[in-house]
Amino acid sequence: MAQSDARSKSRPALDALPAATRALTAIALALGTFMQVLDTTIANVSIPIIAGDLAVSANQGTWVITSFAVSNGISVPLTGWLMQRFGVVRTFLLSVALFTVASFLCGIAWSLPTLIMFRAVQGAVSGPMIPGSQALLLAIFPPARRGVALAIWSMTTLIAPIVGPVLGGYLSDNYSWPWIFFINVPIGIVTCVICWRALGQRDTPTRILPIDYWGIALLVIWVGALQILLDKGKDLDWFDSPVIIALACVAAVGFAAFLIWELTERFPIVDLTLFRNRNFALGASAMALGYAVFFANIVLLPLLLQTQLSYTATWAGIVSAPAGLVAFIVSPLVGRWLNRFDARWFVSFAFLAFAASYYMRSVLNADAALRDFVAPLVVQGFAMSTFFVAVLAIQLYGLSPARFPAASGLSNFLRIIAGSFAASVVTTLWDRRAALHQSRLVEAATPTSPAFSGALDRLHGLGLSDAAALRAFGGAVSRQAYVMSALDIFWISGWLSLAVLVLVWFSHSTVGASRPAVAAE
Image (cartoon, rainbow, N blue to C red; front, side, top):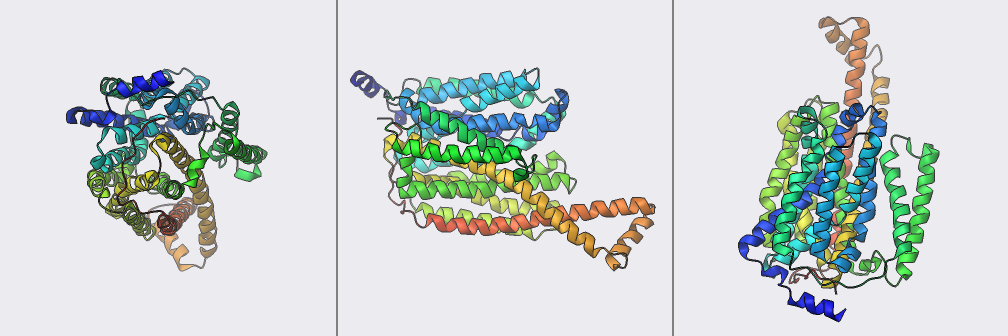
């Protein structure tokens, strides 16, 4: 053990990189993060094409998404242990390399079972990629530029979920679905080569840690059951299904057993004592809740545009593009200012901007023009540029350097679970609110109603028969119901953002916070 420490002390420091090498390494680390986050959403819009090509139903095809989500959700909390045991650089590089290989295998998959298996492997090995890139970005920048490091990390994490569905649809439509996986191969190779050359001899200290077998087993059980529940809940009609009820029971009992075991285990696989730190507990909660609302709206808006308002995947992407562009431009500036001011003010601005963006969407209608949808996304871009950077600064405040990898893994795990929960809830809520609005609209559309008779007259004027006019009217009512349902969710999202804002003001001020080194002691 002592010899290991002596060797680690002889290695060059991570923050001693030349400026040019640091910049190139930061880009490579950002690409690694981008690639992993991209793969959480890129396959979503391609499922019908994948299912058709592999001769299976669309419902069976959704296991391509579920397998990745389950295995990734399980592996992310293990990051802290892996980084302490093998070093941050080694863990990150191995994760990227295995992810690249798994992506290639997904692209050459010859059947649905093999694709699901390779996607599960891809999700499992990708767990350390986001926490690892975050940890290394913080480590290679000097203390005065810590905010810039956080900004670089947050840009890739926020932009990738927006780009994923658009890129996945474009590649599937214009090339073939394997390219949504093959695209990772050159990115992964470039990331590995650059990071190995710059950081290969600069890894963090390691220590021998016993393996918490029971903790891992319980984690696999409850997270696996929860992720399958969230991904399949809507298809199986939630708690009307015995399968969903059984999964909920397994998840609840497994989670309770996991909590008890990890809080009493001497060397837990997940360090739950991090929640004793006020800033981490509040910051992680704000991150999870804020991201849940944000991700729910990322899922909902493209669905609304493409299924109800006749937008193509490309044009739906154009609507979302300004948010990513604004975040990309503003985030580095926020990173510079973050070292001078209390991060709580930045988080407050982010939640206020999120709330304003959601409210702006809640007053639109089915006849809104493209610019009407773009304007709220521009406001959201300013929120995105400050949200991740500032919340991360709050989370890191007060933590000792040795605990940062574990904190990063645990925080990202909560964010992933929150995103999965939000995606499941928002799609279900959208359908159910639409059904409610549709029933009310139909009740109002009586034969004597001026609106009903006027609409039929206009349809008859277009040359439609009575039957065709009634079908067209029914379609218009359904579309209006889904639009009204989406506006309800946008309005709720605005109020939820304001409610989460209150959380951050119970945390300590980050003024004067020092940069935590990334090391395992």
